[in-house]
Length: 465
Image 1 (cartoon, one colour):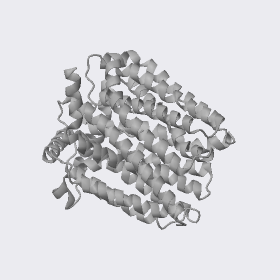
Image 2: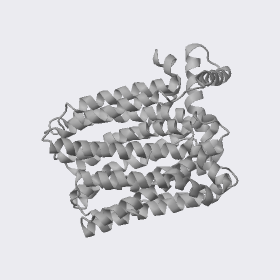
Image 3: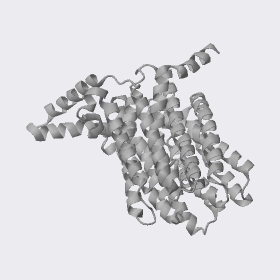
């Protein structure tokens, strides 16, 4: 009992508040290019297929590991010296997001869809890039040997992400409704200016997040480069370039396959790629579904965003405890099945029609299982990475998971249209999509159990749902 109480007190440490803020900053851009963009395009008369394919902009999250070494190595003039490597990049990218919101407020999607999607792509690139710095800064808030604090930090980061996503969604939906009721013709454009104010406020909070260890990281990076360069037959600028690429890109990849074996590593990557595809299909079309069966933007904000945020926050923390007690392998099986099964509740909702009670039940169950799956997924990936290359390997694994969710889910609108708007069948199909990933997990369960038995789960970073 005393141990449980001591574990809970970790959540009230000051550094957890900083990690929470970083999670909020990571989750908020998904409101812009997800919920807000989808409804904006929907209410301006664009088709479900068009909206679904516009979601391809999320694909950049699948490839941010490619430029992660640049974020780790390139110093931003003036800002890096005053704020540190991580905070300088975060602030610079937040300015890009703010500028994009201002540009969005001047564009009509029916007249210039390419501009709208192009600006959305710029937001996605800036957001995916800032996540690299945010992940690194979050990890560095906790010492290497503080296992329980690492776990608590990961749960708080996930809660922060969902807070940025859910509460940001409430602000977006309620602002759009208020402007629309006030007779503002371009009410979504006005809403983006309100969301820009939130970006400014989060950057004020960033000033209170401490950054340390920059000098030590630079020294270690230089030492690794020197070791590789000493083994190369080349010298000069070309030799230095090859050594830099080898130390930052090649070594982390080789390490992952060496640690796990080629066949096991490929199966692990397959599982990560496939695990949340069904959930992504449903999530991409969920707001359109809610609107088509008759829910207002305010009702969606209350049930999907507000109520969903409360349940997500609660069960994210509890999910971390359950994952540790059950063991990660079985927790992944259980969370995957539960996450997919809740999609069937939305199939029932489509048969019944508009029902606030059923809607609330479906949202609560969906957020409960998603929170459990997210925390377990983060723990699973964190246990697989080599601590020598934590940032790069985590970015790689998280990006592969994002690739499955974004690249396949872009066809979600086309699938609904192909089904002629049969939402019930659509949700049943999304339920079945989890099966291939669980087959991959079953194939390597013994190897994974051997790897994880006796190991203490230390969650060092977070990914997006």
